[in-house]
Image (cartoon, rainbow, N blue to C red; front, side, top):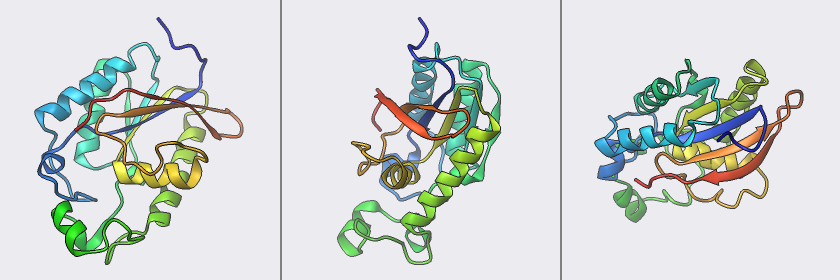
Length: 198
């Protein structure tokens, strides 16, 4: 059965679980491989979108997003485009450290910017520019963007007014679907789709 809204639609998803997600390490723009659970989450993501008539998958250039995209694109039979504008927030000196340690010993939870990192507003603006460019490039198509938890969180918070989960990082494999105007390229949230937690 096809989705109950016409083209064009945008789907924003977080990559599947990684080894560092499982270990509680802050990845940022460093990388680790998908776990078996992460690969399953990626397959489940594709299955959720099996009737969505996805025309194009776009992902960040970090391996965890590319691995997730490859699984999805293979099952959905559509091409992949890589765009570094979708990369995770750069957490500077905090990358690779334990999140629990950061919470106990730094201002991690309240900080607007990690030491030598990218600020929350910088990543939100980067995401806004990237998403807008992608919508114009593939105007009229159904698009799946595969990105990262914190980058998506700040994008939602800054640019999607009234987003009810804006303060929570999306779970691994979680996807949100939106409609957008072909000419204006504004996003209208339709609903959150179910996803498997990390």
